[in-house]
Image (cartoon, rainbow, N blue to C red):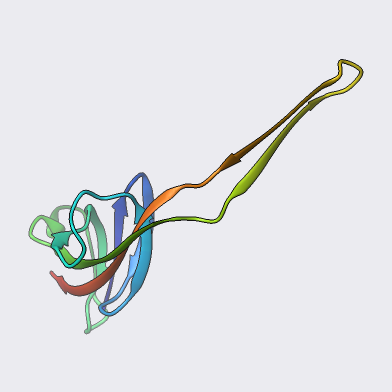
Length: 103
């Protein structure tokens, strides 16, 4: 059984027991939450559920940790103008463990 969910403007395919990093979510480590919108669900009996049949579908997860990703270097450059600029960026994330999919 797996589900396709949307959280933080991105879509993820999740199954029970999966660990994934999503955009920062409010909550303490160990807190249980429901993840975003459920877009589709594949049952154990290989039935594909989507649209109106998903009104009661839920994906429950537990927050494992909060953190920051690897640093990404952004380099801006304009030739012949002596313009160079280097910027670094680290994106915040929340690591969650999927507990169950209720469909």
